[in-house]
Amino acid sequence: MPVAVVTDSTAYLPAELSGDITTVPLTVAIGGVEGAEGERVGPAEVAAALTARRVAVSTSRPAPERFARTYRQLLDAGATGVVSVHLSAELSGTREAATLAAGQVDPDRVLVVDARSTGMGLGFCVRAAAGAAAGGADLAGAAQAARAAVAATDTFFYVDTLEFLRRGGRISAASALLGTALSVKPILHVVDGAIAAREKVRTASRALGRLVDLAVEAAGESEVEVAVHHLVAAERAREISTTLAQRLGGRLRQQWTSEVGAVVAAHAGPGLVGVVIHRIG
Image (tube, rainbow, N blue to C red; front, side, top):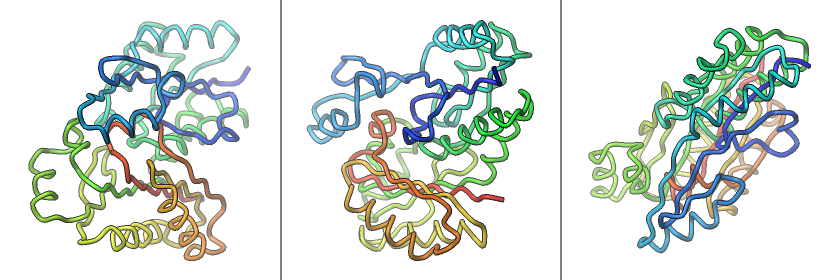
């Protein structure tokens, strides 16, 4: 059995890419009722709760014990080691929980990698580790493949309002107030694992156009894989996917479009559209 790869439920990998990857879910609470992301709670329920405004929505990391149990099961089944790749430590305590579990199980056989992003910003890194493992890479080699993908991946996104990110502590209250006061439409990106403002424009349509421009700039002259995410904004996502395919032309190796899961939905809110660029070679 090759090196096993573990991730968390915010990777949002398309089904055809998930393969033998083991996923540990985060928890989402809606109105005080908890459920595992992707198992009991989905984005539709979160979007409805956020729209209602009177229903509290929160998220929490998996317990270290859940990771430890997963690692032991994989090692007992014959894996030579485990690479555990997770969303940014700047956004969640998930990586910390995984690191604690690795120390409990066997730090020489379980390596934890911070993908410095989430969504397919995490998913591309997970996929790189899994591809390396399937190709015969050892534990260090599979972990290094994930780290290389981190450096080759950029995430940009647009939200209708900064309020949900502010509530969840993912941006400062001052940043949220600025966006509201100026009635601007924010384009954000992930820098060193944290969410930062990239640009502020006046209309949603202009913001979506700039989202495409930024993604194309991030691609440079490289061949790329692209993921387009959204929450209750399927038409926006389709338009961006179509425009990106036209702008990138032959450099576009593969493209996926999908709705985010419950955890990212809870912090971004309805109207989210994101683009993740993964440069190849």
